Amino acid sequence: MRYLLPLLLFLGLALMLALGLERDPRALPSALLDRPVPVFERPVLEDPGQQLGSAALRGQPWMLNVWASWCEPCRQELPALRQLSARDGVPLYGLNYKDRDDAARALLGAVGNPYRASAIDADGRVGLDFGVQGVPETFVIDARGRVRYRHQGPVTAEVWRDKLLPALKAAR
Amino acid sequence: MSARLRLAARRLAPVALGALIALTASSGTSGASESGTAAVSAAAPAAAIAELEARESRLAHQLRCVVCQNQTLAESNAPLAADMRQAIREQLRDGRSDAEVVAFFEARYGAFVRYSPPWQPSTWLLWTGPFLLLGAGLAALAAALHRRGAFAQGAALDALADEAPFDPDNDEFEEGRPA
Image 1 (cartoon, rainbow over the protein chains, first blue to last red):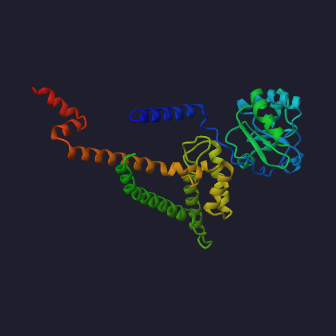
Image 2: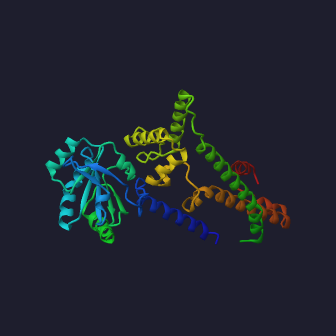
Image 3: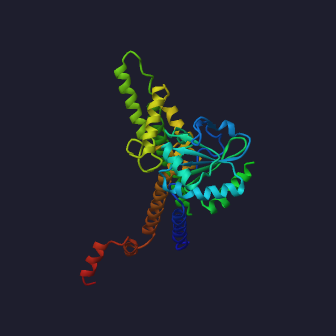
């Protein structure tokens, strides 16, 4: 007992520190999980005469990718997003966060547009409603309009296969 | 666990509990006074504006910048922090209370956004941890003192000297002397 207790304390501390190393302190759980998706209605980047809103997207599970042309990881994930969403037929929408419209359109024109439509969020208020910490972020929303998953950081093929697609399939 | 240790723990428990209650009570009252700011009177616009700015600044000091997580909104230069300060300003202008503004951010970023975490199951250990550690330390100290006291009573004086804790100064002194 005399020697066992310090040993157990040490092992417990070592375990906690090891687990702490594995975790990303910046990755916070989204406060929106299993809550209704924030209501928004914004002009469409590709066609500013039209509006894209959360209400119109009810009834099907969909993904929302928050992106900006000034964000390097966003530029990098665009080709992967385009390939993966086309391959799996996923309704992927964009939220163009605090960006210049011309710069955003130029980027989509250069690397290809993965989105069915992107809503313009020039002042970042829709992003604030989504609790966006930093772009890119990707949300999975179910058919009843609830947020089911949030991924922070660029989408890779692994993230798509292991997290986003299963969340979308579960959201039907 | 010895009977004495249990006794010491029982004696210390009310003290720790009292300190805990005092702390939660004081934090509760300070929170209430901050959030219970009265609505500003329209009769004095300059004073009202100063009041709004003071509330905005106080809220900005209570909320965390979620990009640079060890800074408050007031300290941070991040664009998102500027947006959040702007949102505070607009909501105060719209006549929302301080508590409503905090709730607005909590709904979007979670309880983490508050620099003073709320009392809820996931923060119980955070709030009570220091007192639990203090209590455990005091209990261990009391147990050690009891044990030594009992030993001294029952044993010879030289045995007590052996049991005394290691003291470097004293040790050097003993070494310098022929035994």
